[in-house]
Length: 157
Image 1 (tube, rainbow, N blue to C red):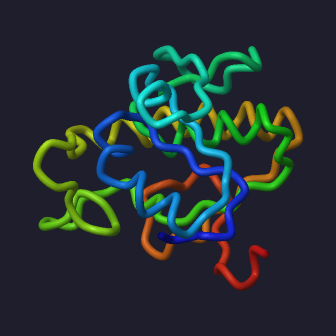
Image 2: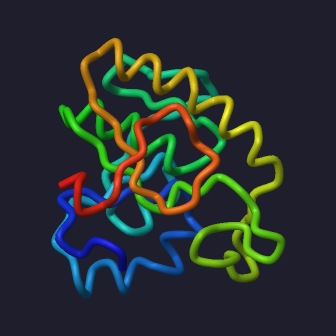
């Protein structure tokens, strides 16, 4: 797990939670969230409504999906009152072999198709967050996201 000290862990779908729930609970006391009602009920997670949407949902009972869980987690962080967000693992590009910075999801989980769409959705999210006074910095080593300030991780925290 990347951040066992996290206060909140977000996973969008049932397949992710099925694969990771035991490991997450073994090393973290974080509050666990999802937008998937089946996963919320099955694993006793906190649930938040979601819908397709562009930009930031300011309805505190709803997050916009943005086609990926990172986008959703950022919207959730806003609802939880976070004023500074540090992005890690937001590469938003295929390297020819891997679909994610950590590799491909195993069988039964979706790997992304058109990541270019994700990048354009992040642009409107970035604008909305800036307007709301939320600072977002991207500490991902190699990333296609240009809408957030780039920083080295040790400078971000």
